[in-house]
Length: 255
Image 1: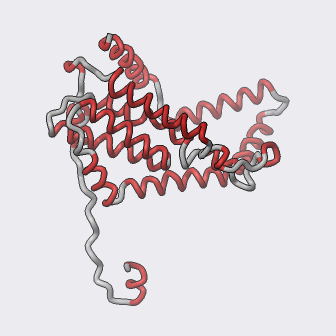
Image 2 (image 1 turned 135 degrees about the vertical axis):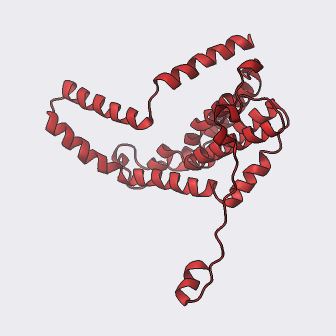
Image 3 (image 1 turned 135 degrees about the horizontal axis):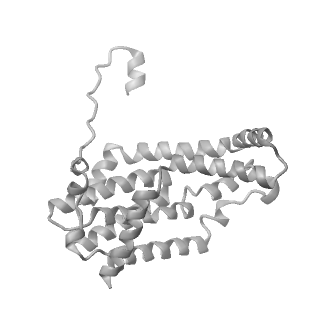
């Protein structure tokens, strides 16, 4: 039964690797599809549709800035030396394949809940670190499966502290304020229903990746060094040398 499940998941892995393009390409295709549908099902002409797209784009400027800052600040936080050392320390704890898979799900879920931009980078770092340390301990895991376990909790971000829709509708001047008004996060993110659903989601993912879907066929497992030898190297960020401060301006800048 476990072998059949592994073959079933392999099918989707192969399909995604072969057919799913880059996210930017998907965005372009969807834009073209929306343009064609607007021409077919509305009275707007090509020029009117392009102008409407251009005018509507800027109504999302504030929202786009929020999302950009979430990614930038999340990346900056996840790659700090302190966070890197913490990740390395935590990822050294698992001593079995099941523990490795459970750790990656639990840690990435926490990251996604706190901030989806932070979670994207954090999940990648812990996935790589867990895989490398597992290989050093001679713990046999499938790196591809580990990556799937790390990013499956991604959907939790919208239940968490950086959920785009809850934060958007909680903004006083969001673009749909006339239709739905302002909805505080106490009614969305911190609603008991949402919190319970978040916990149940994490538990379900832990059970699935930690026990139900865990690969059993050792001949099909691929370690991180087999998948990409360059990824198997963990580097610690080099701290810049302390600058010799000679002027008041340098003192203000570097202290």
